[in-house]
Amino acid sequence: MKTFIFLNGSTFLYPFRKHLRVFSWLLVLNVFVISGCQDDSDIPDPAQPFGKEYFVAATDVGTLPKTLLQTYATAAGFGNFTAAIKYDVTFYKFTYKTTYKDAPIEASGLLAVPKNTPAPPALLSAQHGTMFKDTDAPSNFPASFTGFELFGAAGFITVIPDFIGYGVSKDIFHPYYDEKHSALAVVDMLKAAKFYLEDQKIAHNDNLFLVGYSEGGYVTMAAQKEIETNPAHKLTLTAAAEGAGGYDLTGMLNQVATATSYSNPSFLAFILQSYNTTYNWNRPLTDFFQQPYATELPGLFNGTKDIDQINTALNPNPAQLFDNTFYTN
Image 1 (cartoon, rainbow, N blue to C red):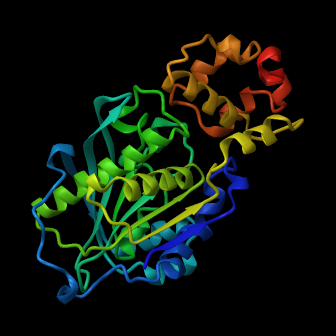
Image 2 (image 1 turned 30 degrees about the vertical axis):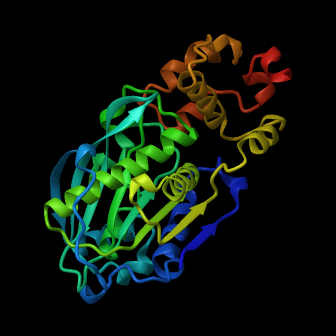
């Protein structure tokens, strides 16, 4: 039985970390009704490993004891759920092959493997929310911390894709809210991870979970669709939980763009600049934005600025941020 959870998409442009605390641990404790671990007797004979063509490398970045991960959880505001953190976790910077504009590239993410679980654990892919700084990429753990790493300590083998445009692919402008590239960043990492787990004889059961919030909610839904409509991936989804993603982009952007003020203009500029690059429009930014913003945007989205810095530099009134002709039409 599949379980699908969809949370209100109207908040898709709100800051992600504001909601992660409640959302992620509700998923661990309440949403996934199928256990993350499964008795060995229920697991069929392992099939021939697949996904070798997607795997590049897995670099061990250390094993963190559950006591330290409980400290991480408390510091991140998850103190009430430290009892769910039961396992030490080995973390790997994970590099794999995917495609961007139909050309092969390498992408990266984080792989978390719980230690000494009583039975083979399930596989879970967690998709992070909107980020702007290169240093926030999940593969930079432990220097970066999304909160999703704690799924490993709760007993799930967890993959956290950086997404294209971060980590080893940071020279590419992130294809923000693009269905194809969002889906492949997840699906290809899952296939590479499954190969690596089989190759290293790291046992796991047949359950596969997807979870994401904010942009990660959209990415999760894109990956869910790709898995369910393309059997060539050889992935079977057990359950998915998508929260506050921009599922109706046209409707939501129209609503935001016609408002007199929007507190996160960084998101509006990010999605428009992403589409200009991803879909090869290649138009000058002055076609979309008023000055001085058109000139300043490349420096704002160069991977060194955080959301607050970008929001401060942009006009919160869409009518004063966007070019008049573009905004009117």
